[in-house]
Image (cartoon, rainbow, N blue to C red):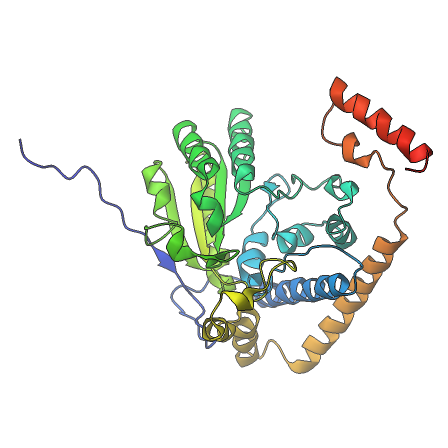
Length: 359
């Protein structure tokens, strides 16, 4: 019996704007000047909010914080394509997308203080609370995508994760379920090269994460995650695919986190300084700034005015954060279940009693 090639797959990688700020004109998306400038403004907003969070943590005003510095393009390019009906299923580093979709940043800052009220998503924003466990949120994204399909809604559930999450069983279960049942889910993996101190080379023997989608029967592609234009095009096409009922999709955005995993980590203990510097030269904001400047669409005065405006907004969010009344001690029980189990009712009552007694 002859050997027959059953299938053959090719993993594609998209880049439109190179690190020097030069675009491939044939791949350039049809975006007007306002939208192009808006992408840079979005990334600058993310970085400003991010830098403030880092300062707040260093001052002891919030707790552990996971910076997204370096990953702004991977979030801004996607955000521009989202619609109100889409669902976001974030992990710990999606504050840029959440802010871009309307989450007040004082709620995110309060999340970093361990305040349970931060998990009460405002009306009008289809999002689950940020997930701390690794990869478990992808199962939720697959379920939400299945619900959208059953309801015949032209929307997508976007499940976010990092490269480390792809080593978890939950990742594979979510992709397998979505592939078998055709869930309307976009699996959005920001491969920033490091799962805390574990490099990508020790996560998988596969050359890419994108190719894993093919094993589960649906499309996957890789994109330069520091190229906001490439991210925009890739996520636009992927979301159109998912919303139209053609099945799930996986995007692997190649990027790099410039800070430590969180403020509880010290990346200098395991990452070579030369590697960090090499990625600093690929900064997504610098890349887009250079392109827009050459087009006559951006200058230093515009940037100074934007930074001043956003900085004022940031300070207003910090004031809102610190004006929040102290949450009741029972907050840790009040938002997880529609009906609290008997064991937790007992613990809740015990906590109330101890609080009254000053323990």
